[in-house]
Image (cartoon, rainbow, N blue to C red; front, side, top):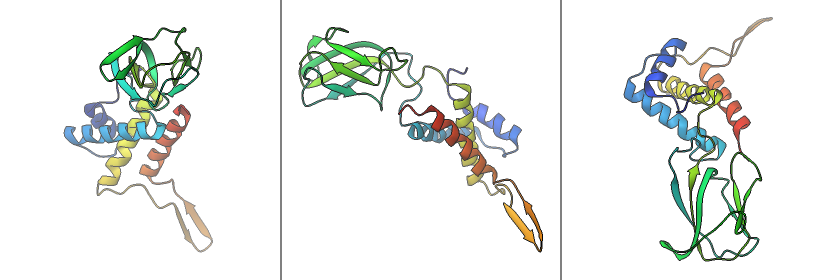
Length: 198
């Protein structure tokens, strides 16, 4: 399983091997970047690929009351380092302890998409952890990004993008495969649907 999205160089090789045309390294890198942004948009999580290093995010809330929740479904946690509360950013009054002050949801899930607070607190929540939906890029996701980058390449090129879908002359009808870019986009969507978190 790859640990990163495809590189521009990997996409150049892929596009050439599939007969989609040649592309400069700069353009290949740009197309992969667009494909990754479309991937994250399609599954509703940005970033999808979680950073190996700890990041810190600040969440302003009206107030933390016992039983209230913080929705992290758009920015799930792969791992959690700390949760702190404060009245203003940078002025942290208290570091929360799990499970005394909060509980992660779903319970025993691979990702944390919500925190439920078991005590009251201040207006700002600082969360440190590894954010994202995955710490690596599954093979089907890697392939989906290559498919979207290929579809974008084909749409931007002057080359024909597939063939006629249906041709009929008299009583004889011939069906052709869907245009290549359409098939590539359909594969991308199929993988995205299977990987959506919510």
